Image 1 (cartoon, rainbow, N blue to C red):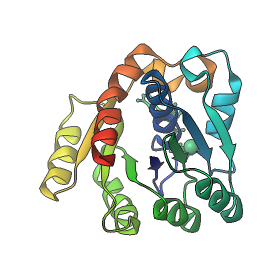
Image 2 (image 1 turned 180 degrees about the vertical axis):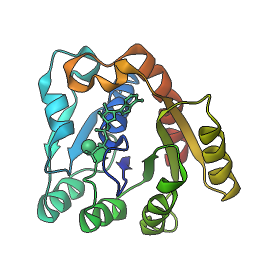
Image 3 (image 1 turned 90 degrees about the vertical axis):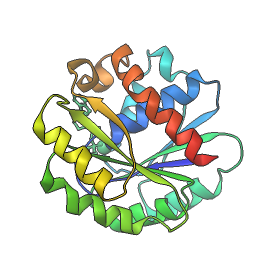
Image 4 (image 1 turned 30 degrees about the vertical axis):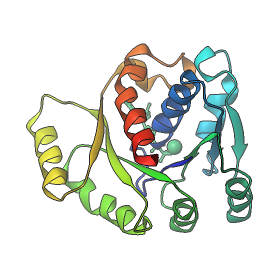
Length: 197
Ligand SMILES: Nc1ncnc2c1ncn2[C@@H]1O[C@H](COP(=O)(O)OP(=O)(O)OP(=O)(O)O)[C@@H](O)[C@H]1O
Ligand SMILES: [Mg+2]
């Protein structure tokens, strides 16, 4: 199962989503590979930081070029869960990852400025590939949040999960994955599994 976490926009929560999904897939007893297609290697740094039992046994493949990404994705398939973290702004690499996706997760944030960027990614997803949004770092008690959910639902776009803004989630590789974060990402993991069939 290739799960591609893709957004064109920087800083929306791609890497955080990728790492939490990898941990949840591990917790479910699955073999997990994280393919880091971002030259910034944030997911790679996070997984290599070590010391977090939640990420024990996650295999890391760094693939920040088209050649490496093609090779990484061709070598997968079958039983393991592969979570691909994508680089912001790189339409070619994102497009390549999307071609190999079984399920696509598009992280976004609250607010109307995000909407057109999300649509560009949605249009890049192959027609038959299931995809859904995860609204990251959300203040769920705001009107902006309600409006964002209403907007996507009105567009017929699945909002698979909302991850609240949490200091513990923002800690990144400097701390262990937070219980809150794992709890918040769990519904997304379930939706991803269901979508993958
Ligand atoms: N639920 C959350 N609560 C608080 N902070 C969050 C949450 N999710 C993500 N962040 C923070 O938002 C910032 C961007 O997240 P992340 O690095 O996952 O995004 P990205 O899309 O991978 O960014 P880039 O485009 O630079 O690769 C980070 O500082 C991260 O810790
Ligand atoms: Mg990132």
